[in-house]
Image 1 (tube, one colour):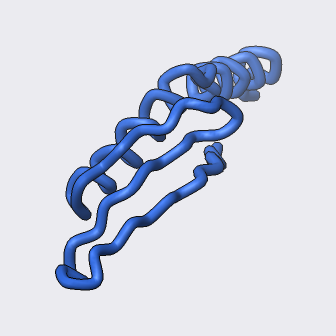
Image 2: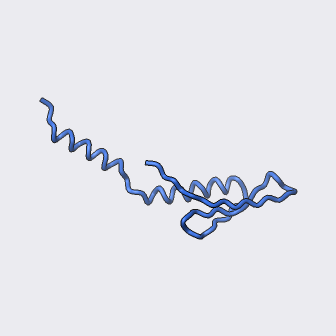
Image 3: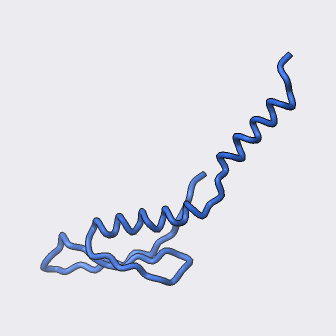
Amino acid sequence: MRLIKTFILHLYMDLEMKEQICGGLQALPGRKTFPFKNNVELLNLIRQLSNEEAMNLPDTTAQNENDSDLTLTNHPAK
């Protein structure tokens, strides 16, 4: 299963320090913006928000394993 998450990214760049970026990340559909001060904070923030969403999804792996077990018991080998 794939998770698709939509973000709004606001980048702010200082013209004197072009390699340094900062900004805010908004995970839709919510309205809360999470600030970041560098590339590492941005990547960590994306990872954290994505993992929180993935933890709320139902686990379909266990269901698939149970379905295959039922198939095997309904059709015994001859």
